[in-house]
Image 1 (cartoon, rainbow, N blue to C red):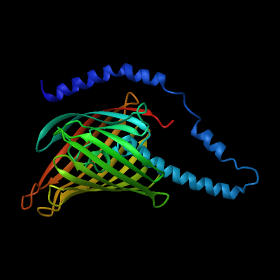
Image 2: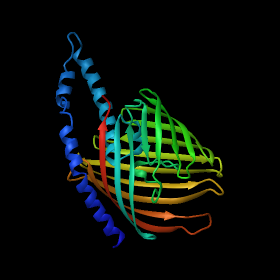
Image 3: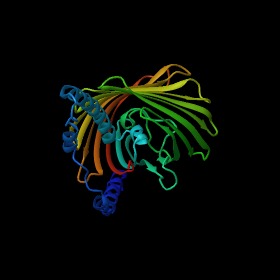
Length: 336
């Protein structure tokens, strides 16, 4: 049986098997809290003696700032941004079934498990990270790296410090070669304005068998409207046993069509500085994502075009790539 048909059968069997789990989760879900409209109405009533104009200005400022954060957080959560999950106060599991057609490599199928699970019974600061890659990730939806055919990894994360704008994490895990990997990561988030926020992170790692390494990340989110935003993601990776650094940068324009639909345009490039300075890939594409049938089930299609060069002096090759994805997302809020 062709691989793509085996994948479709596996998708159907998995969806049917977790139907009972999803229904149980919905039945056990807590009742809805006070509506946002009621909450905003109560907060809009000024205390006795307070100036109405001052209250209105404060409320307007809070609304703009909250709206900007909500747009960015909704986009990150809907498209499955890995960095948003790492800092969120909830457990998340994402099971992805992918079918990709590449003009050069033809069809390729893959199944991925990714997520974060809190361990409150052991320690409220402890969590497990699944499928964290040694190469790191940059940009929404892992646009800059190819994670196909990689070994699943589990990393234990300890949140040592968490403030409003920054956090510090310690991590330890086992690499695919069974060597220990340890790291410390500091992340800082800064609101430049009501509609522009930046996030910077630095992670220093010790990779058993390969020495030390570092991951530098810089992200900027620009809110254009209540439903539209621009995201700029950058990364620089260094490893002790490899010359130079590798880098990548991507720019995306994302738009929410409704509570269950969104799409985005993206462009990007990646490369290295040694042994010679080179841009390995340029790419451009669009992605469309939709929640369907169940709250935990998402479908996505992502056509893109890539211009690649494997080494300096080689001719740049181009290829059309189309990715189809079916994703199951399960979340449990532990903020309380």
